[in-house]
Image (cartoon, rainbow, N blue to C red):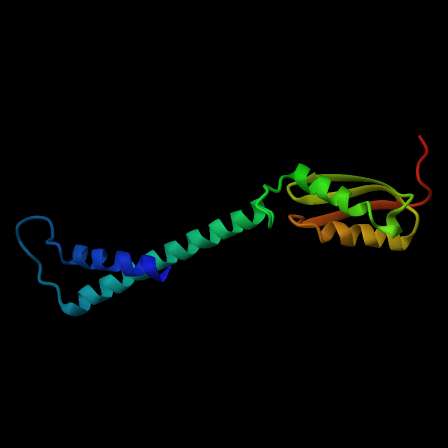
Length: 143
């Protein structure tokens, strides 16, 4: 970021010294040139910072630590995968739906501890912004 400002600032300084329209040259005081250069550098810095923050947010939202794109389908699969080894979730019937990185859990679990664990596992999954828990406590449905 500082590198971008150090590259752009000299050019902005030269632009402030360029003659105005027409043949008459306006004499600029050093204070005016310095102020214009500082203002331009601040605006450039602000634009660079804003762009970097937007890029960082989009990168964080869109990529997993391994570089995979985190789509809603990817998140759903990952949550299901993490449920498999959980003792509290055995004999449960959990449906996972994901929309815009918000996971909704539906179905049944065998107890309150299982319901809480399902929420914790889903929230701890990479890419999940929020979890809506609609799980009920009861026996597994039989088809």
